[in-house]
Picture (cartoon, each protein chain N blue to C red):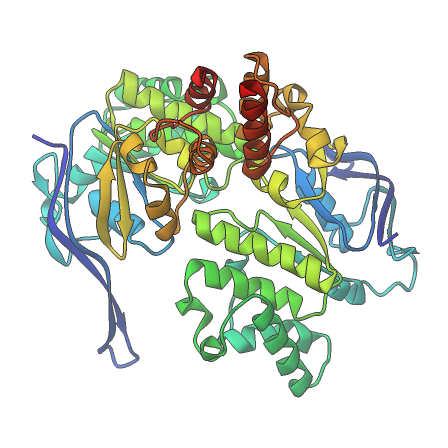
Length: 283
Length: 285
């Protein structure tokens, strides 16, 4: 059974006027069918306003579909009594690290989630320790979060989700506000969780280089899924991606440009290593 | 010299147990019309530095000069300075507040004491510069798209007729096309309007493609100051201080090592393309 499944999923934002009458309906997600395998690493791309975040927020029931159905581990997110179960199974990490930290000490912050689930105190501390270890932040457990760097804060935020033992983590542009080091740290932590703990990862990002390692890429436009496939399949469509306000990793772009000028390079180059290798092989 | 910092130091929480030195003895000269990329990891001192440039922070020691005048001297008009040196903070769209786009952009010049008509003229000029069409003037700024909101916020600063524009991560959170639109706009402001640009960025690719001078901060000091090409040639040292060179730099070095005679100083895709094509042609001739 897929961990996440959506059928004919749609979501409308409704704007009300002063008299509480519907003034405007904006259809942010429309007719999305989606199936995510347990343990996979999925990336979602799409320009600002394409519906990525609206789709993501429906995975942990922050938004309830206005059309169609979303199932998380078989649970229909529209069933109100299942809300907490859904949120335990699918955790979410947002863009701004400062908006997600509530504790005054790192391990208290991470403990907040499991505490809300009603876990035994002993067990909470075990979970906190494991979670911090899994993102490489155990050494900071006694620190004050506001003294951490952006990348460290984001890793604490991820640990807070991990401590709830979720099946799936949804990250909505977790690296947008970070410096190169912070980006690397967070991405490594996420990859490790996926690889070692088999947590399903759904990563929303505007950085194409972060997508190269995903199992599957979904591209959205105007609330619908318009492309999906492996990173190789997606990034070989340079022109199409540009049309949808996206880009490709620099190595792919350079390979594409060289091909345009007659270099006999393969169409599916993704990384620097592959490009160097292919160029050296050109007799 | 448009902006000059002399032996500038700044310490947060001075004379408390939380004392943190943020800038240490900075000497920096910025000429009118420069396009500067400012890089450095979080906590390196970049943000503290830019807040000195329009007098939001008073240095612990040292001096700040604008057009040759010490801005902390008795009688210097700091309000006036802030109309010359505009600062666009991170996520400036969070600072939009008015009921219409036009009113929002008119707010800055209004504070300068200009007439309603002059404010409107300034706002119209600034909105045209950033490419917000007239039919959006009367809409709520909150109904604009992400990229439009950011451009409207930048217009709010431009409407004050700034001579220096400092932008802190203006492309954060935008899609690739949105990033390029903002950067193209910034380049245009410099080329067409002669506005000095100081761009704080975590994207080495953006600095490589747009800036003419790159300044790297590390632990409150200037670690590198030169053309992006020059700075990125120190990519090993950059890595040690939490930064990196553009992907292209690594590709070029690797190719050179593998025996292809390319120009390792290439830092953008077009440069790399040219150099690789040339090296390949040479090899085959």
